Length: 331
Image (cartoon, rainbow, N blue to C red; front, side, top):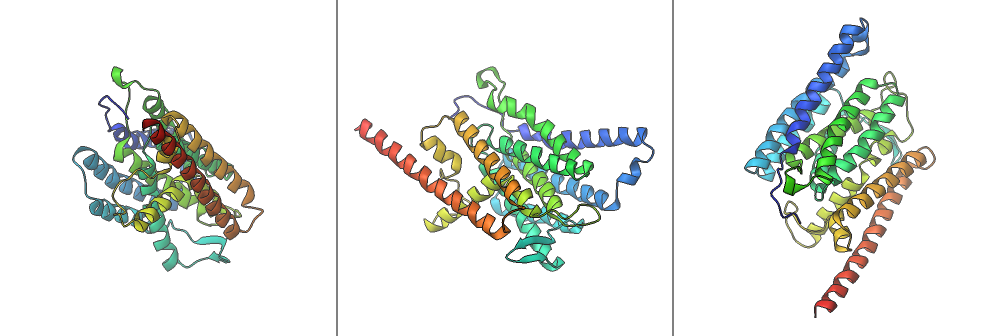
């Protein structure tokens, strides 16, 4: 839909800026507060070091993909390695908080579940990046909520990661949505940015979901609360893959069946479509956070899926009606 050449390497700035800011702020606090080191546990250091390792690999692959292209199999191998860094650092899903009646789960189950979730979420953010401001907007919503949840839990070092990433995204969002390509002031994040964002969001969501009484008090439905902030891209990628399987298409082959394509097909402008999808994500997230302490987790998940299916069926009808109307006018 764009008629001017637009740089797609905006995401190149994400990882270096995040690393610089975290090191700078942490260094200043270490200098000012002599007891600062007591707040940094060995677990946190391990998690951050492995997080940086994963981000470095995804950063390199993302740049290569944006410049010359990388096969999806190669990207999946790298994503698998990066996902393995989470369990290696001691970070993994260890409690389902009552989903299917299951609470604590053993390490040998929690680790592969975590790796699949990281790969799944990282690709979900990458695939939802189809119109201006959508991937960054959804990430902004998630980072605000997750950062606030960590602050309320007194885990300020994780909140700092969330808000630092938020600070990186805000100027990007402005130039991505409101920038003028004809004046050289518009930019895309590319795979470098979307893969980086997906991995950081995965880290924060898994951290909040991991039950450790010494670090984070038991929060009813914590896994739902954490991942509900990213429900729209996660549900959308499942629906798209199922559609491709049903129609006999390659699941890695791009198509025009994502949620933003449906809004565009219904006659929405790209900006209105972006605002509508962000509003939908906020409603899902807020509703799940409120209801997580009141409703059985499995019922809540089923309700989310049924609402999502109903909305998509409605969108399909509206899109088909508009296409039929447009075809009749053309004839």
